[in-house]
Length: 231
Image 1 (cartoon, rainbow, N blue to C red):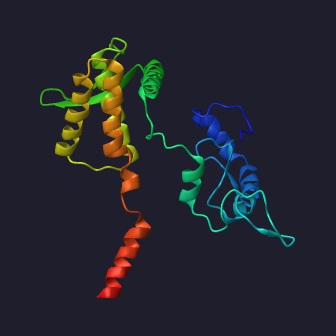
Image 2: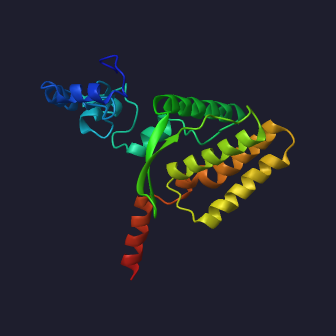
Image 3: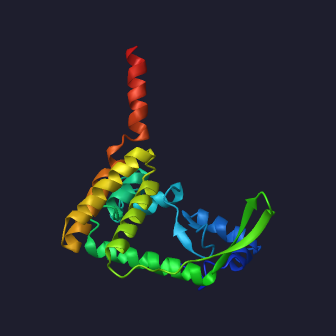
């Protein structure tokens, strides 16, 4: 819930809110009810689902001798249960339409950034002049809409984002192997939509479900505990 209509990208405005003498006081009141201010948007109130003060609102509690009927989760819920039950995993079911939306979002993001920061300083070191300060200008988007070059560029970008999101630390050989395969699936199909869909399916199968297929920390600890007991 936003308490103020402000620009979240305005650092001076955010600093003004955080520096307000009442900010800490209000933060304390929110904490008592399982809420807190968003760290990125200091005038936005969000639910702190890790707070014990919020549990009575989302899990059954004994109230005047009766069980609450408006609960959402079991009393001893875990954080992952909330995401599994109420959040959509964006890497599942990514289709052609979602990919086009992804492309347009990235284009808007880059264009906005380029307009705000058209040039950047770069220090260049060479033997003759020593250290030289040069300007690097942001390049305009030159891809033809829905061209092969554009599709391949954004497939690569989508793949890189999935690597970061799943903390997949692959070596260069593995990454190149994946790229050759999903690019090949795209290029093999004469129908653009089918090629993109199959390329996305490949990426999502090999990376998108990585976190799901990997054993959780709790499972690893149980395995270690079991091994230590058997020795």
